[in-house]
Image (cartoon, rainbow, N blue to C red; front, side, top):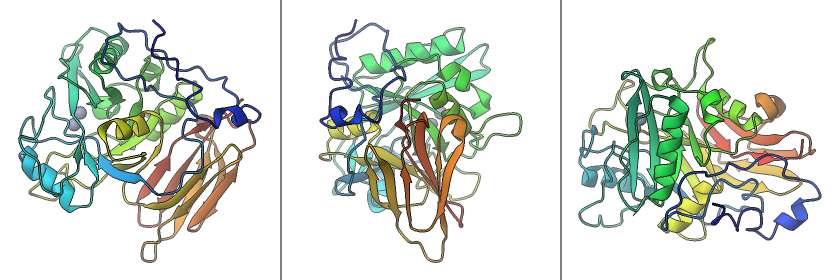
Length: 354
Ligand SMILES: [Zn+2]
Ligand SMILES: [Zn+2]
């Protein structure tokens, strides 16, 4: 059952030097489902993003998008042209339980990565369980079981077996699931920490953790999963606060080239940052430090918060540059950048020994 994991932990030449400073006590997510021939080898990997990551070969994309093939209000051509016209390099059309493929190429259009929102509804119809399947080779039929963790796991397994990577979508939509469920699921690569749909309760409430708090609890429990921002766009004609419009959440992926395999690999290994409005012009992660540069935006003031175990703040820096020296006992370190105009960006966690 371990075939396909051979590359884990030794897939990059920096691993050797890391062992002095950053050890690997956190357990890797194990894929325990049935193996298929076509599945990708790439699974969430700790610290695979370490290295000096200059902003060459960074590609912007949206990985959660609906069209008229499910409940979106524009056809796949129209939707793809919207993303092309707004500077996106790649796009995942993720219709509910449908693998939407364009019938013809859009001139100058983004790289199209096959996808689907695998959508289950369980426990008498009260709990929606949605997962995005990214890079799948065939459609994935949703599995509905009478338990939240079992349903999440069965659909993650089906996505991996279809050659894709799995993203757990909008946990707070109808308050469907939380960190206690997610930490029991193995093999999911991504968690939506900023889904821009107005109905998904991203920010939580005093009695409910926000999706970012859910992410910190999952990371603190030792599960490696990377945080994404997405549009979950449905409405392409009318732009209002209660519509789910495009352009409100995206990922910027570092990849060797703009191909399906390279982008999916970049997502699966945490080589990306997420944003709903902030652009990074540099992101350098080494075994010693995390450093980033933020693109100025009119008179906006930026604050970067480096946080660790249980979401605890490690340091806070105002300005267009921020860096953090890794001590080694943080458990993990990630950064959240906030602007005075309300936008945010998030980098992926780097894991340490304690
Ligand atoms: Zn959904
Ligand atoms: Zn959706």
